Image 1 (cartoon, rainbow, N blue to C red):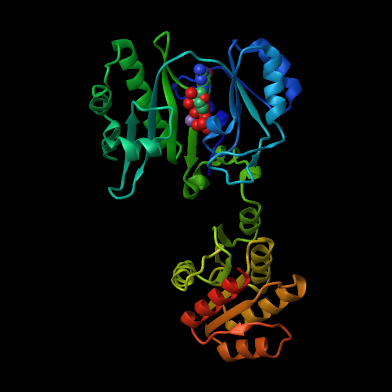
Image 2: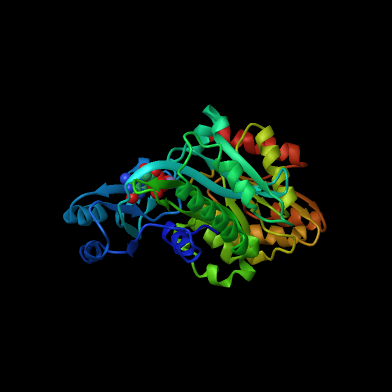
Length: 391
Ligand code: GDP
Ligand code: MN
């Protein structure tokens, strides 16, 4: 689960990580009042969406006159913002954070994430902050410093020194102390909130020598939300893909991908294997959809509805291994879905397992037009042919 910048900054503030003063607004007429209580000029207008790259996409504006605060918020609110992380349609801006402008002397990058290859959390620090860290990693990897954290001991002060004393030019002692405290607090936030990511880019030294987090990004591990009930309240469903949201409601594991072959599969492992086989046949999956081992007729119907709502889908591959989910139940689900939502694309079905004959018979006797494949390889080839035909 991702948090908004203003939510992450609230957590930072409570955890002793300095952030600029700011106020959240949801309509532009609130802007006039906010200008009077937030220090400025300059003011910084920041669109609150769950995507980065806002600076370059026009979602962060530094303005110098009160009327500009109003016009800048009017320009952003209620409209889609496109950044390199949103996709071409952008994301609607519902909320704006207005902050006091900070005079920047130096910009750093600081984050904490899990390094899966070492099974350890890792602090990442770089003096090349403010810009795309991915680019820095490619072009000057020596500027990215890392400290792995032993879970038994936690964050150690010597690790902060390891990172900070490699800065060139070095920092003044007061800034070193503040930066060490920020690092320790970032670690604390990461652990106590069950985060998968805490990222500050840029973490700045101001012209007056203070360390301040200008940006804030926090992601919470979804598997820990059961014990992070307070954080669950910060969820903003408006930021989620509407199809993924609908899938969540019906307990379907659905993830949207970039291709045009809709896939309906039972079991996560089989779903992954199906995606591989679709790729090997030269096509691209439009989604990952695991209807689960014990899927009901209703879940199958909903699964179809979700796949078909995705206008990019040009063919559907149904790959079911009937174990707990019997093939006849699946077949009836397919028919029920076809009755409710006219299936406008070719359907390729591969069934195997419990009650497979009965399942095939149900499909054969229906008026639905579809192709039954004898095995998974053939199913993938058939589906790839269908999408290459339609282009
Ligand atoms: P992102 O592009 O989505 O990561 O948004 P950021 O919050 O990082 O803002 C983008 C850029 O705006 C930052 O890298 C800063 O250079 C600039 N910026 C943000 N806040 C301030 C501020 O208070 N003062 C100044 N001078 N620049 C700011
Ligand atoms: Mn940033």
